[in-house]
Image 1 (cartoon, rainbow, N blue to C red):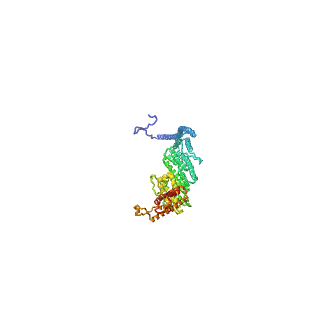
Image 2 (cartoon, helix red, strand yellow):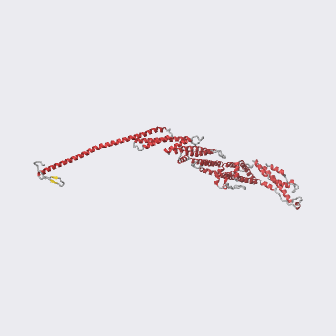
Length: 629
């Protein structure tokens, strides 16, 4: 319903059913409408301004709230960090307690090895737990724990070193060497426990420490014994070396003991094979060079007087060979070969064989003359001294002679060869008894060389072979007596051709001496007597004048020769009564020949005046021969 006084405007129905009032078309209504629109527009601007201001306020509020919200988050994070830090500190505190518990125990240094291991395990476990901790104090605790572990290992290392030093004392006194490489079993057990500890904590400690301390101990003592051996040989009075009297044996025994004992102990202390082998080679690394140096020094001394010192060389070579065999039996892997170190010494020993022969030739040829009393030469006595000592080293000498080749190469190829010499180097050893037979052959070579040179010297001094034979027999008898007096030498020469060759030399030398006696005996040879037919049928025997003259001449020649030989024999000034008796016995071969000749012709069929021709009857001749002794 419209109010009174107002004009009612027409209404229209729109397509959607709403009612629409048409705009007034009057000026008054347009102006009013325009005014209303203007107001609406201003209102809209005001509303837009308000909305704009409201948006700015919202931003301001938001900006104001954001710091508050951020601070709240920060405080929340700080709270969480504080809680985490407190937790870390609690953990750190618990590990600090471990450190505080272990530090005084370890620093006292008196823990058992197993206790050190337990302490180190606790510390290592704590260090591993602290590895991810962000706290600097955790890092500090970790550093202190690591230092404590180092202290623990150092304590064990010091104990290990002291234990080794206590069982490996190095003395400054060289005159009293008490080398005892054996470590007590209880100590070996303790060392083994410590080595096991090092294998876990410090693998670089066990082997180097052991090798350094034990190596110095062994080398010091062996060096002292080596010097003693060399000095003793230098000071030794010149003369034949007697087996087993050298200081080198002390050195060799100590060396053998060190090598065998050290390996046995090392294999107990170091369980792993690689570790034990490393420890053994490191401990004895200087031993081979030291041994070579010792042998070279001794070799130099031996070469200065090879003729007498050669037996020292044989003895050392034999000792080395024996020790090598013992080492092979007693050890798993020897650190070096003893025999390979003795090559120069073996060469010296082999040179001594020719040196002996050269020495004999030089001495005999250098004599101003052979003794007129047929005394035994000094060189013969020296040779028998050699032979007596050579027998002590039959196996060693065989090992030295065999590489030189066949026996024929041993002799010097003397410029003078005896008419009876057997120095041809003949003979082939029987492998079943090779050592003895080879030595027998070599000794026979020495005898040959000696007697050949004596013969050569005698032939320059005498015109007749009788005295040449005498000189040979005089020296040969001394050789044979020496051989018979030693069952060892006699057995040695019997095993080869030595005795046979001596017999051959003796027989031929005797032939030289008996040369005149054989001529004398030749006068006693029978003559053939031709008998007549009547004699053959039982008549009285008769001799032709020619046969009678032959018998007469034989008696005359025999008497003259026999008397001269007896006089000459008695003129000999034999230094050796045994030699005189031996030769008198040998010339007695004339007696049976004379007796047979005498019995045959004493009846006088060759002459009516037999007294003119038969000077001696059987007993008289024997008395003459007996007077020669």
